[in-house]
Image (cartoon, rainbow, N blue to C red):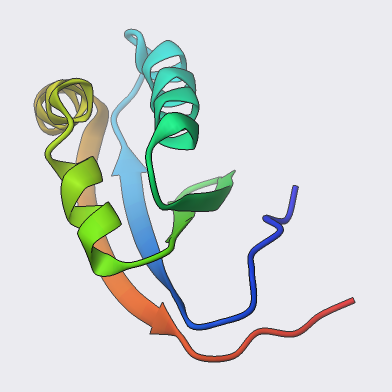
Length: 103
């Protein structure tokens, strides 16, 4: 589903990854992180797709919201598990959305 974001400006966190083999709890943790982020102040929405490369884009009101989310204790544990078990590689990019349009 395409996220219903407000009028810009707002921020996007783009998480791109390649996975290891197997699930080993990844699916459950990914769903938990989405539910937890939805409760977080400043969260605006999320979009995700995975094939050979996974791309998840989460949208945030401001940089402070992103910083606070990054420090969430459950999110920190998920990050540790990701580095240890779930990802061969990943990259995080943060950008300011200046314009958006669509139908």
